[in-house]
Structure formats: C-alpha cells, structure tokens
Image 1 (cartoon, rainbow, N blue to C red):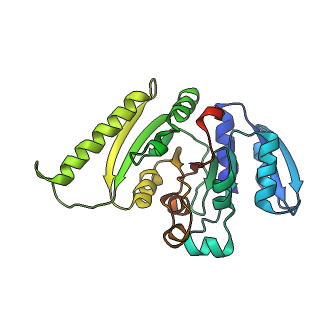
Image 2 (image 1 turned 180 degrees about the horizontal axis):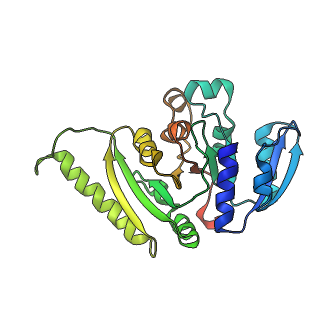
Image 3 (image 1 turned 120 degrees about the vertical axis):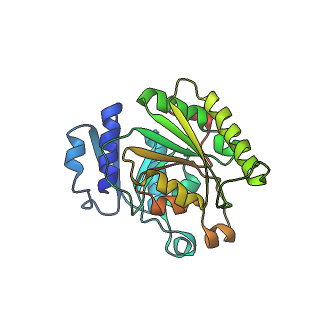
Length: 254
C-alpha cells in the first residue's frame, strides 16, 4: 500500500482531500505509513465485515467518493478468474473511477501529467470532458496516445498503407487535442503491444498517471486473453486510473 499512500499525499498537495480508509475483516491491517498521510489530510478509518466487494461498494454508495483507490496484485486472465480479483470485480460494478496501484507501482509524491490512451472509439473518448476538467483544476499536462498493433521496421515510404494510417491517427489525436481547451497537450502514435508501449512511456518519468477506459468485456475471451487495462495495471510503475463501464459523465464528480 506504500505507493497508494504516497499518491494520496501527492493529491493532497494539489486539492482538498478527505480519505475514508475501509478495512474489511481485520481491523489490525492498517498501512504502516498511514501516519504520514494523517499529518496532511483528514483520514477516517472504518472496519467492515462480509464480502469485500459488497462492503466496498456499500461504502462508496454511502460516502459518494470522487474515486476508489486500491492496491492490487495485478491478477490477470485465468489466474484472476480462479483466485478472484478484487480490482476486476470493482471495475465491473463501480460507478466511480478507480485508481489502481499494481505490484510494480512505485511510490511518488508528484502528479504532473496524465497519460491518456485512446483507441478511436466514442466509448474511450466519453471521459474526455471530465479529464480536461481535472487537468485544468490540478494544472496537469495531458499526453494522448494511440497504439497501433502492427509493427513496422524502417522508414515508411509515401505510398505505404501503414504510413497513411499513421497520418490518419495523428489527425484523430490532433482533433481530440483541439477539444481539450486550456490544457497543455501533446500526443503520439505508437506501434507494438499496447500495454508494453503505455508502460514504457511512464517508466522513467515520475509524476505520471495513466487514465484508461474499461469497455467491460466479459466472458471466456477476457478470461483467456486478458484486457489491455489488466496488463497495464500488472506492469505499470505508475498508478492507473480506470473509468469503469458503469461510470456516467452526467454524474461525474470534478
């Protein structure tokens, strides 16, 4: 939980923050570094019993938080389906964004830039107004990135279909950037495995936060293959904010 506590401390440096620490089952399992956070923000610790997902969702319904923060082991695919993944279950059921701290996540007391992967769909772009509001209020830069799955080597020729697609995707990201007024923005079209590319972007850059939209894929395909979001959470050294399928822009908290 150390990366989660340090990140909440970083949030507290930029905005008013109240923390409700929910422990399910064992009241003695409090983070050892919680005292540092309590010195900066108001922390209310509560203990609940019962099934963990239900207990956390009940707290969220009563407390109406802006987000749920959780440290996760980064279980993926069949392993997650057999052992159970609290993070995956909360992504499926939560109506507020989740901030996930995977097993590779590093402590950081800085928040400087949002890394926002897009796939060209309206579903992935539906959170853009809320993200722009956060970026303005917290004075954060935004990097838009689209990862194309095919890989090419060498310099693309003018008639190369891949080069034409790069130009098309760059135009898409440029148009998205124009929609985010008064936000410092850059963008990139990359090639390769999406999770690997996204994680590489933040590896040597502290203060980054990845923001991803979950499509809520279910069934055997997701259990066997896993999603890009799951893979990113498992490998990223930066926190990953996940916009869940049940989140609604109409009821978003700034």
